[in-house]
Image (cartoon, rainbow, N blue to C red; front, side):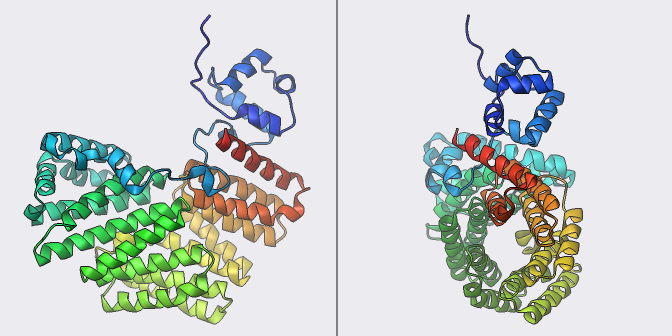
Length: 457
């Protein structure tokens, strides 16, 4: 008889082994037949929800971890980008190598890709439906195809289309659970812009191309940072700064410099980032950045000051943050969509500042407020806020609560496929190792080991 194919892959066998049990013992404790359990482990049969929950209770493991299909592992080596940006872009949007096949093929490929990316966003935000329809109209893509054949024919309408697509990628980046889903599309978009930029263009067109190219490079850098790829993030931010300077786009230059500084903070060199952040703030104020973007830059500075235990400096910076956010409510500026800095993000950063300063009650209040304002979806930001809350609980001696929050953060990191968030959970778990004999810490360690095994399998 032909063997059934595995259609319902899971990590049940690894979890049973990690718990120190046998399939027979699981069968006895749950009442599920041994043969059925073997089918579940082999992925031949879908595990019904009630049985999945029964098995998870026995193994002291969240049900989602047993059936999660795409798990990033314990380190960046488990979720590497194995191809260069150019190769990835060619795979996802091969229109640059298909120029000889005419505008129809190019139009079909690019519009289909964008339509696929737009679907979840338009469903969640119906107000974007009209914008989405405009962006996938054939005429705009045909103009773009002609411009790629003869870059000197790039006109204002084509540029407006490219700018609208770039802004939409920012919206998609903010709304996507897994930021890496946008990698191919943004890489291809950046290659398109670079192709146009390399040609001789009138000065006004050249400057607008530099601006949209700098903006797109910053999206690519953000995706790289989420994937814990510091080298690619740094390269993207350097490119963004160079293009912004060449195009005399000081607002974009300030934002790219802020992102470059934040990469240093993420890599543990916060003090070295202060001069760049201060330069970005000065540049942003002179270029009349929105209050929202200035608040975002100032908040990063506040976190560095908190890390350096400069309480008075941090508190003054936080006052500026709130002042600029209040000012931004009456503004309508294009740069507001490029940072996405909202009150929920502000509360999350503020909570982390208080955590660094050791003000645990203030940190808890801000972080809990951030969770209330965030959508319930398992995003990277939610995972990071949960990790910070778990740190607060651990410092207060509430280890059961700390481990429970860490487990929830782990699930969010897995579903968002964010190595950055997963790395934060691992750092927290390491800090809890002094209590590794406690059942709650042992359970968290078991979940992380299961995750590592599933990623390597």
